[in-house]
Amino acid sequence: MSERQQLKSTLLELLAIPSPSGFTNEISRYICSQLEALQVDYDITRRGTVRARLPGVSSGERDPARAVVNHVDSIGAMVRRIKPDGRLLVAPIGYWSSRFAEGARVTVFAESAAYTGTLLPTVTWGVHRDSGVDAVPMDWDHIELRLDEPVLDEAATRALGIEVGDFIACNSRPEVLDNGYIVGRGIDNKAGVAAVLAAIRRVVEDKLELPSDIYVLFTVTETVGSGAGSAILPEVSELVTVDFASVPATEALSFDSLTIAYGDASGPYDYHLTAHLQHLADSSDIPCQRRVLAASHNDAAAALAAGHDVRTAVVAFAGDATHSVERTHFSSLENMVRLLLGYMCSKPTFAHDTSTTTMSDFSHQIDADRLPARADPEIDAVDVIRRNR
Image 1 (cartoon, rainbow, N blue to C red):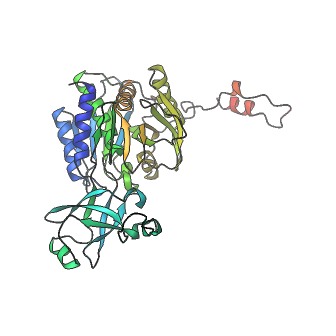
Image 2: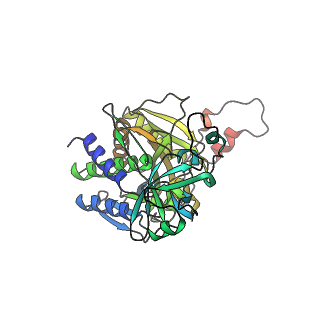
Image 3: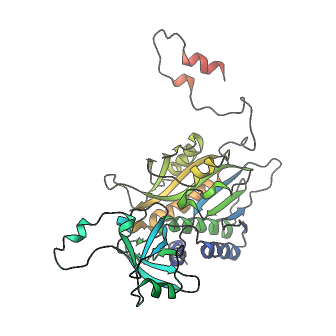
């Protein structure tokens, strides 16, 4: 099976598994089964984050461990009230606009059964030029879930076993096109997961030598903000996050490219690790663009917020319409596999990152010899920086 066929098969299986954040046990079990088939060691946390380990080569003095993280959870919803007419009001899981919920086909998971339905605006349905549709506010108070069951009142809906707090998953309904695009819900970040699993498969099947241990994390709460907060081991010195980046239509983006992010809503990523990824992409002719993801918050930010002393970087595949009907291209996923393999097979950014360090080993960001000259400064930055080398 070709790499693209493998990516397609894995991604379609991932998209078939409902996994709104908080309802991810089955997709965690799927990840575990994939790792077991490759004979890759892993453990799993109480809530379902899977942590795989790809061992580095043995040496007299081991390089610091590194990690690649991606999330398997997705947006979704939860039943928050059963209306007198039997329809359901819902609360979103993760941040997504009610605008993108309208028309979504969904599955409601009651305690003993699952039911299909559709998210719709609360309007009085009419005919051509019904002005009432445009007058409905765009918010979650004006979205209802119509069940595909003959229910006309609250009692009939409860008789199905549906209650407040039941999880609701968006059905992906993926379309794979002959030109290499795949369109559907939940591609963020299941396409990234498929690429990461493909990279693990290559490491195992090609018996690639890794200079240091690589932990691969599959987190289950990134969509609601916590993500990799509790799953990073102390020996991990740097963390590369794989995710979906939706690029504005005003920015021309090649369908096969990657995005190397330099910062997001939480602040900048690590200067040196990001530069390392950029160098790997450039040296391998992997098309990529540099961006600041101003509206993004992902596993890298969650790790730092949890207090982990790790370098962070983010690389994303080419996507469109985050948390709506999303799209990506298999060429971008193939390039993600290439970059991940290049990263895994490269040396850690700094060999001394096994622990805290001294000033003599600590990194630089400014080359004093390249600073612009200033006329008669009171204190010359060049002299100050040189004194501390």
